[in-house]
Length: 83
Image (cartoon, rainbow, N blue to C red; front, side):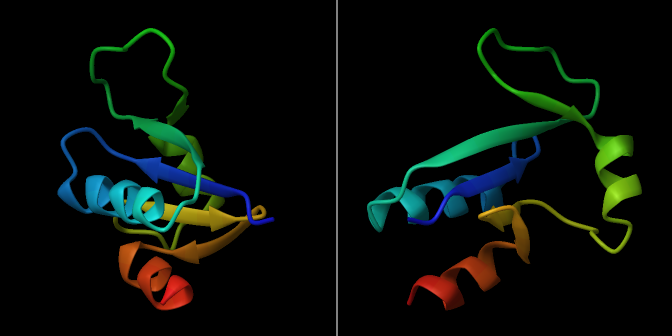
């Protein structure tokens, strides 16, 4: 079974599209919101954006989707993989 992790940013339309797409295909996912200084919501998982960028310096946009721990890219790559 594929385990999806979606790294998102606040107010990100592409991030919402990726999450909705996963749901529409019957997949569950773990969401990690990149901490860019926004107010925190109880129960959400956050990761410091600087830490994330240090690990993945080539990444310039959100969402970033991981499948079984491997980064596949953004929403377009997710769509290609699941279609």
